[in-house]
Amino acid sequence: MSDLFKFDKLVKEKLPDWAKVTSDQHGEKITVQAEIVYPYFLKLLGYSEKEPTQEQLETARLVMTSFLKRDIVKRFTGDHAQMRLQILMNEKKTFKLTKFKQSGSPINPVAQYKRLKTESKLVF
Image (cartoon, rainbow, N blue to C red; front, top):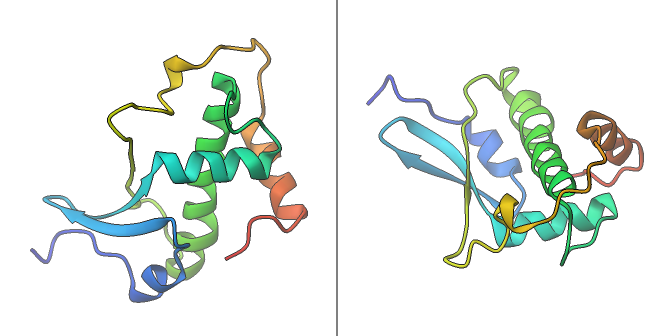
């Protein structure tokens, strides 16, 4: 059991309410509910919460992952290489990527992450 990955206590304390540390046979991971995090990040990014495009949904996922890795895990441990993330969906799979239309317009998730940081919208 000692070879399994475990998050530092400080990381667990600093996680936002919508993220929880759970365990499985490989160790600890951060688990989030799609129905909570996608609307939250879509709204932060200024996108439609009800009818985002696939690109907007993917950007929301990447920004959320960057926030957890860079602003929480790496800040308090110095390393985010071990972070595993699980996004749980309800039975309806409300936020399944293929349920949404493609816009054909690429979005730079790194630029969006930096914009939210600059605007102080990503805080914990």
